[in-house]
Image (cartoon, rainbow, N blue to C red; front, side, top):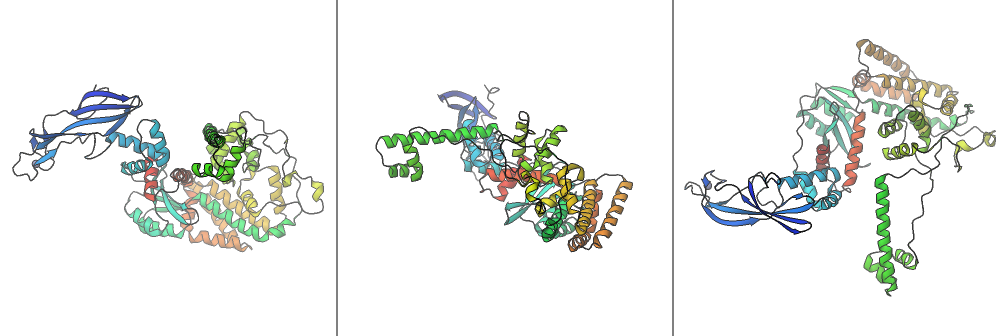
Amino acid sequence: MNEFYPLPGCRIGEVTSLDLAHLSVAADRKFASSRCPDCGHSSDAVHSYYSRWPADLPSAGQQVCLELRLRRFYCRNTDCARRTFAERLPHLLAPHARRTHRLAAAQGKVGVSLGGEAGARLLQHLGMPASGDTVLRLIRRLPLPTTAPPRILGVDDWARRKGRAYGTILVDLQRRRVVDLLPDRTSTVLTDWLQRRHAIKVVVRDRSTEYARGIALGAPRAKQVVDRWHLLGNVRQMVERWLAGVHARLRKLPGVAAPDEQVPRRRRIFPRTRSETAAALGRRARRLALYEEIRRRFNSGEALLAIGRAMGLARGTVRRYACAESFPERASEKLRPSILDPYLARLEARHAQGCKNALELWRELRTLGYPGGPRQVRRWLQARGTVVTTTPPQCSRDEAGDKPAEDTANAAPALPSSRQLAWLIVRPRDEISAAERATLARLELDRQAGGVIGLVQRFVALVRKSGVGQTPVRHAQLAAYGEWLADAVSSDVDAVRTFAAGLEQDGAAVRAALTMPWSSGQAEGQINKLKLLKRQTYGRASLDLLRRRMLLAA
Ligand SMILES: [Zn+2]
């Protein structure tokens, strides 16, 4: 029995099936004597017997409750102040605990993955029920993993409350795991954290002066590197602001003809994932149960108002259901515009090149300005297996590009927004479509815009090329940056000059970014994981809990 159901330090007695779902396992301690917790003297003089009923891991789906018959001993050591003591089972459970160590660990781990409420729901099915609050408490009790101190550290901020409170996420860029979350993004907190870690050689950060100061004070010998992802973001924002100021002038530029291109379109809604289908079925079942209950009460003569009050429903809902002769099904989904639509051409192209990884595709789209999450991309990828998306559209959509050119023959064609143009400018030229190239060519008809675009694209190329190791390459890279800087500071556009001056204030870290392989782009992925964990706890996660879950899940 003990091999089949090991209970450390115990001898198993009778096993009773209470009902189909509950099992009781009676056991007592193996040894005749026990040691006094105060003086350590062994005693076999039994004072009395008592029982404990802790919950244990389930057995073949049945909830297990242990019935431990334990003893209280006399301490015979005359020097000891204690007269009696209870025997303990340190490997099985803590004094006064209502669950064994191993059950607590299993419930805590479920909580790490799912959070309090969802964890509690799963645990119910697994035969080890616990309330959401208990699950949260057990997560707090799990020991944090001990890991080697990071050498290459990525520092980035993340929104604790979007627009209001920000924290700092610290990522070990070599091991690709989160090492800590800090409660804010001030230099003092970062300094304090860094001073307790001495192995750090390189810190990759954004251009925040707070972080720069925090690192300089906390890890003065570490090399600071500006994150390339952030550099690209900075230059894009600069050009977007500049475009916003001159957009009216650029709108008047004549259109430049682009060779005809077939724009891929969707003809169907994105298919649902299995979990979404399951959730939809669950919602339907709940609505159906609601409908049947309302009809039952209504037919037995209850008033609408009373039904609504009894069931906690709005009067409109009650009336709608009470009056429906049959269950009102939800309307099926319509084909709506998707935020993914502008990127379909790009997705098609990458798919044709053999890229079938949704996350990778999503990350690429992100750099192009796609504002959504990876789920839509995954759905597209699923649908891509069965749907030919390059066929002409069946339902026409209201897009500027659809309108025939004759309509607007007199006026200049529409120009994308400053934001869209900024994204277009920072994208590598060989990745953009013929129509987009035509838009850029149109902008370049303006002498000043041509100058800005040229400078921005040179900078982007430098940043994208960085990280390739050999010394001559690094020297060439730095020389090219020097030339770019000279051109940028003598530009006739204020925004460009200010941007270049800003880079020079952080010069060493920017040059390091152009010559070192490290980038905290992966912090972005970790921040997404963080958002997921944050959402699962329905906003009531304290930072401490979030931090634990993040570190335990890493
Ligand atoms: Zn004692």
